[in-house]
Amino acid sequence: MLDTAQLTGRSRTHVVDVESFDCALHLDVVTPFLRMRAAAAAAGIDLVPASGFRDFDRQRFIWNAKYSGERLMLDREGRPLQAAALDPAARVEAILWWSALPGASRHHWGTDCDVYDRAALPTGTTLRLEADEYAAGGPFARLDGWIERHAAEFGFYRPYRSRHEGVNPEPWHLSYAPIAVPCVAATTVDVLAEALQSAARDGAPVSGTAEILARLPELQRRFVAQVDPPPPTLLAGISQRSIKD
Image (cartoon, rainbow, N blue to C red; front, top):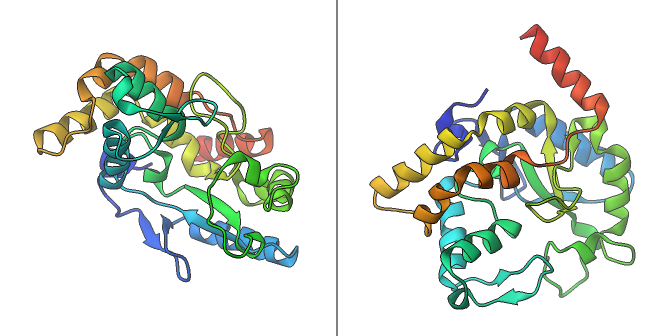
C-alpha cells in the first residue's frame, strides 16, 4: 500500500522512469504495461503512454492555471468556459470534470496512464485525448476495441468508462487494478485535506482551497470514489490477494 506522501503525489519513491517513454510508472506496473504493449504490437498497434505518473506540484500547476483562466476550461460537454465568469464553486466543479484535484489524481499512484496508438496518429496532427479520437471513425478506434477486449488480461481497466456525477468518460485512461483499487479506498477526505492544507502552509496553495475544503466530502465521493470498477475477474484476483496479504 502506498503511504500518504506517495498516494497524494508528494513523493515519487514508488515510481521509475520507463525506458523509451517520457513518463514514469509504479515499480510494479512497468512489467505488466510492457507485456500489454507487446501484445498490442503483435496486433499492429503501437500502444504508448501520453502520460503516466504526475506529481502534486504538476497537478497543482494545471489546476491553478485553469482556475485563473490561463489554461482552457471546458464544461461537461467540452465547450469552452470563461473562468472569470464563474464563482469559486463553479470553477472548482468545472475543473474537476476534466482534471483531478491535486492530491487526488490517480496519476499520483503511478498505476494509471493515458494511452494512444502512436502509429495511428495522423501526420501533422497533435494528440488531443478527446473522445472522438477513440470513437468509430477516429484514429484510435482500433486501439479502443483492442483495449476493450484485452486490457484486463494484463491487469488494466478503464476507471472512467461511464458518465457518473463526476469525471467525464476517458477512453484513453487505463488503470492497473491490483494496486489502484486499494489506492482509491485509501484516498480519504482526511488524506486529501492534509495534502491541501500542507500545500497552503508551504506557500504553494491550490487555488480555491477554501471552497474545496468546504465541499471536500462531496467532492471526494463524486470525483475520487465514484469510478467504474474493474471487471469481475480482476476484482476476484484483488480480493484473493488481499486475503493472502
